[in-house]
Length: 306
Ligand code: NDP
Image (cartoon, rainbow, N blue to C red; front, side):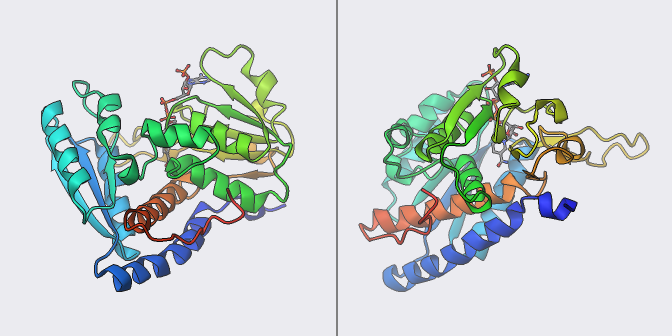
């Protein structure tokens, strides 16, 4: 098998999803005389966040979605941020609200997530949406795990009964991923920094999802031959070029791609794997929010996925 045959092309899947979303945003404009609207709030100057926000805004614009950006300085108070969100909650022309994480330490992420109206929570982080997901009746699913599931369902003929192991238990990736895989009839194990003998678990995984935040931590010793590996991690290595310190370092995942490629059946690359799918799923959630907030039926473009 060549490298290309083994690579799960997240960019290609993202384009496929966006091709289904675009006609729906066009139809929304025809029906309601405005585009679906996503508002992104960014607090501070985190350089990774700036890139993520820019990509989200550009993808929205290319896909018939109005995107607004609110930039706040890192010393903004929690109260002022809450006031912005409250105003957006009331604004009938705003369908989706996304607060780019992480937030500065003096602001409680939990409090901020709880303030966003569940019907505009396109990140799917609000407890109401989180609870609905775990009850098996999701409305807005967190974008990264949704994107992972979309690729898995396309790549694996029958996911039922597979052993799925997740490394990482964050609310953004690990926990919702576990819920989605459980709903897809996988047997799910979640591992984390306190798990003993983590390889004993991962070597039994037909599907391994890695969301750790440590560059290239996972090598071939973690992998069952023939496993499908989804690398969620995005890590920017420091530039090694002392003459040009401003050069950006290489972008790598949490998985050592070259080593794992030799033993896995399929693997997502970084970049070009989970990242583009996350943004496509955000577009999906925004257009869905727009239709639902107008009390209008939303065509399920995830038929066969959920
Ligand atoms: P968090 O830091 O919130 O969670 C990391 C998880 O990994 C924790 O559960 C932690 O365990 C676990 N962990 C850390 N070290 C180890 C270890 N040595 N062995 C086993 N488990 C470990 O990160 P996120 O979930 O938010 O993100 C994970 C990665 O995914 C990051 O690289 C991030 O940049 C990337 N990401 C990418 C996205 C995309 O669109 N592609 C979107 C979101 C995130 P414990 O709970 O015990 O501390």
